[in-house]
Length: 73
Image 1 (cartoon, one colour):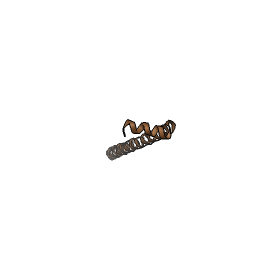
Image 2 (cartoon, rainbow, N blue to C red):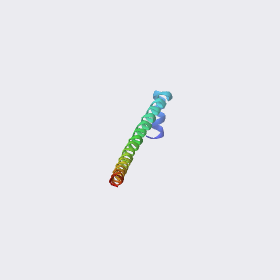
Image 3 (cartoon, rainbow, N blue to C red):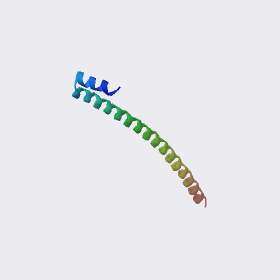
Image 4 (tube, one colour):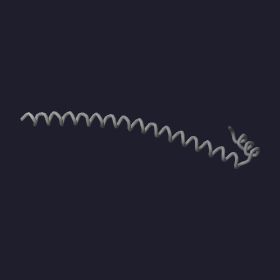
């Protein structure tokens, strides 16, 4: 779209209508981008939680082994 097309559209349907369309497109663009960012963060959080869960499980196993050793003495 070149400048002449934009001027023609504004002259035909009016500046406020063109701006409403532009703002609607902008809101959709930002919303879609925000959704993608949130999805990335959610996936990253899921991976972090898996790592934390594994670390807690490993600590639980280590503590149980220590408790068993102490209990045997």
